[in-house]
Image (cartoon, rainbow, N blue to C red):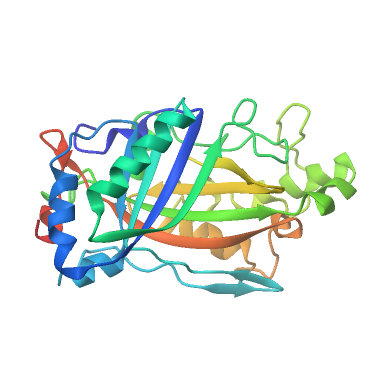
Length: 293
């Protein structure tokens, strides 16, 4: 998919850093974005644009919205929107750090960093709970179908919509569970990653089974663990050709279909959440023509 940002479809990375930016100086926004557009797009960086930035530019982008704050039974799902998002991928933490400084300098004074989260690969793509993450990810052409906008015209084709949430795990609660109880939360055996039919209806794999929705709700997950001090969890990153699949899965997890909440909420909760539009690539550079640049 030559018009998609290559980092979206690229396979795993050992380390990552997520940068969120707020608008700092409106008169300098266009110059900062033009500097960003002047750089070649590689698979080690993915750029996302928030609705507030699109609106500040006086534009409207079909399909882009602000992640809504939601509630379930004893569950709060926050909305923490940002103007701009950068996902930096790589294998050297020092190189990623210096690349983030370069991006910050490039975007100053139009934008200011509002949040930074560092993440890493644990074992063979496992969540810090010990369970494999993203095992049902679509691959190849199916990944493109799930994650990339197509047949919508120049400036939109090749783009993607990404939902980003930071989840905080309660490991004390999780560690108090028996292995069988933990398996019931996930719906897989941690020993071999196999799903099992006798898992309760609240098991995560049953709540989030992408093929069980109508229409099917396939998303391309690029999630990674994070840790800061003694706090840790998962940065959930979900690419789609729209936000519809992500929202369908989250609504079911919250019990809005049948009042059954996802058992994940017994030990983990999202502490942030935002939507972004990841523009396509043209001649090796970001194509911001859809928002007038």
